[in-house]
Length: 549
Image (cartoon, rainbow, N blue to C red; front, side, top):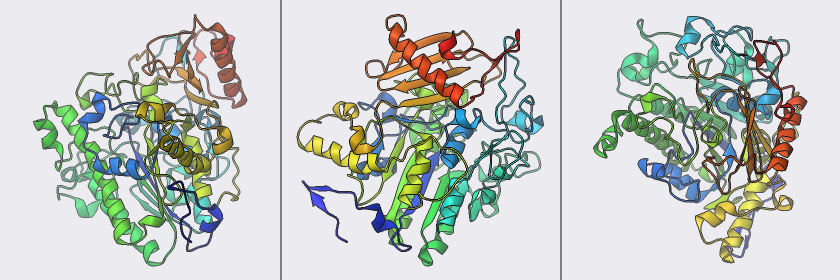
């Protein structure tokens, strides 16, 4: 079938054309850990910000130029809630998975999780005023009856049942050790490389055997990498090589495949990728900044290597590539160098926070013949939207699952929506990046309202020390308006993101009606989902909802 053309723009082909065994698209979901919205040369914002210029990422740039980028994409403040939302199509507050899972937890009141959990940064909550909420501390489970989990049918199982060869490479981090959800095999993956309970690698370095030495070993040691020991191969490169190996079988047998390429990078420990680090040192970066930038470029090379392999094998044109990160960039960790809490500027704060720096993330799609290249879409979207999106791309949207999902498919938004944006540019209605980021796609075209509520909820203390702009926050965005609820102090903040991307001007006092409206929206949604809430140590009762203060 020839690609139809109108006004020089490609139209989305009917999905029905992709539903045969031979024509269904392959799907590569390329997920990066802890990489921020401005941590590449791809400018998702209204302009190229200073932080964008620090990174050399030609393959991410090429993906953006051949695909669609979502300028208002959201993930959860920390890893596990985002990753489980991707698996289930549920909002993290709805799942009750509102924090990251540790290795050895088994009940919500157990925050220590033993020595291994301590290595991951878990601690007993020492807040004198607030007690941690009861949440699904064991993550997601593909079977019923597992304590403190949400029972759901995982996305890879649905894809596998629909005829896809499903591959997991890298970081899983969906559930605690000893529960079914901890294993990618139980979640529907046919192949698993290195995925387990770990939320970070013990080491990225081959000379450390990626943690598999007697003096370093713990549950964070990365498995299945023996052939790379002592070769000088950074973990990012080793995982990429293994991913390419896993693609040989489905390509040779002409089976559609789903590759979930979930890198551990750029999570701590910040360890240099020696292929790239020196040029960043030479550019004047401090050691932490140079190491981090080298890890970002290592991930970029991984993306480029996968694209090159797909082209070599002749399957690139029938492969959908989705690029995303799991939360905002870490802005308080000293290993990254620079000045703390500035890494995500112009966004405020970073990982762990419900301010934009912690939840706004890169998201891009490549889908030849279905999207209009080099277009920008500013409709707010969120992690749980990827579940129905991928099922629709795969022609598997009629598969049955047990959970009540919250996400909406983005297929019409990225296909018809990108065409509309390109037409507006051709007519001269969009002439700048700023205008593109402000262009509103009508719900009648995309199926998604640009004013729908986007809810993020983090009712936890992230670190063993106080971080006022990170701990105990909940937020709702609706259109240009965003409400932040500070649970600890029972305060409401209101921001207009169109005029104040950095969330510096609290407009709650000036706009009491809008503040009340969004507080009610957020409160109703959290009550509907029975979302976990912290408790007062004084009264033993849950803290009030935002519309109850």
